[in-house]
Image (cartoon, rainbow, N blue to C red; front, side, top):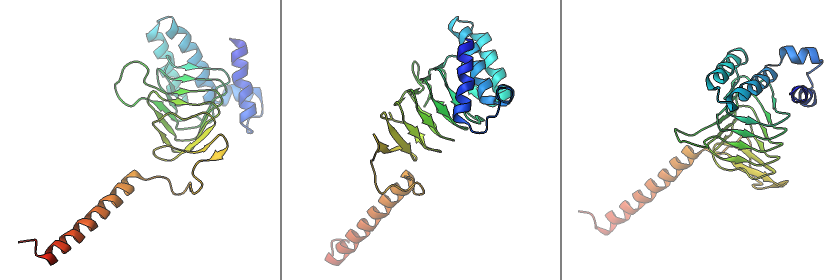
Length: 216
């Protein structure tokens, strides 16, 4: 357990250039406090002491602003940078060397039973404000861009951005060469454009019918 706690500290020094000393990290890093609280809560959760586990989880949420359900399975060297607003659901499974930034949600999509939260495999990075929802898998070495909404499986070694999340790089190859981060997919605008085209076509057909005298 102490070796695991030391790894949680060491990964902060590797990931965060602002970390200066062990004393500072142990006392001031909310992400570290949330992870340690979760490891304790998860210990009780596995022994079916659910109320005690949830109490520890909720106390941690109050002080850190990070909500990790005690049922979530989290690997080694997990790093939460800043962390405010991070939510990790009950059936989440997180591998080793995973990094989350503030505002990330690993949540469900409804009231379904069983496995309903994401699986995040090792070495993945999920940037600020991203939402990963449902029983999907984020593959190894993948990156989720800030503000993205991911509803489908992400292949290993991929970069995903946009709403809904779109794979733009896979295995080091750009999937969509003309992709622009400032021009993210907008399904509402696309649907409005389709409706406008359909209206124009109907107007043209109506004019042609009037010319032919087909209308009464």
